Amino acid sequence: MSDPIDEVFAALANPTRRELLRLLRDEGQQPVQQLANHFAMQRPSISEHLKVLRDVGLVSEQKQGRQRYYSLQGALLQELQEWLAPYEQFWKDRIANLEVLLAEENHD
Image 1 (spheres, rainbow, N blue to C red):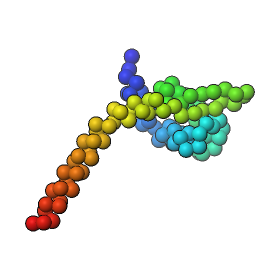
Image 2 (cartoon, rainbow, N blue to C red):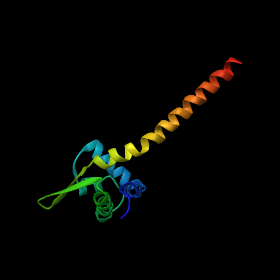
Image 3 (cartoon, rainbow, N blue to C red):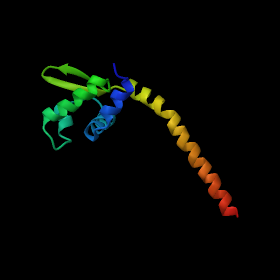
């Protein structure tokens, strides 16, 4: 069994999937066709990308009549954020150290 974080990174490696997540974040729950309208690809291709996102738990699917609506699911994104937090702090510290070094050199 693979690590869920590995699966999330694999899903996020594709720019179309990242854009689908952005659309769902910014515009809320949407049917497949409405999402597909944002791309220069056919609906079945978008459905395949949504399936990958659904399989890893980044989106949920709800069937209403003949339509399938997708929504962003934030739990794994929160887990990913927690995994990335130490690296974010690492870079913030490095930038702060660089700012101190540059300030010291400007005083010389």
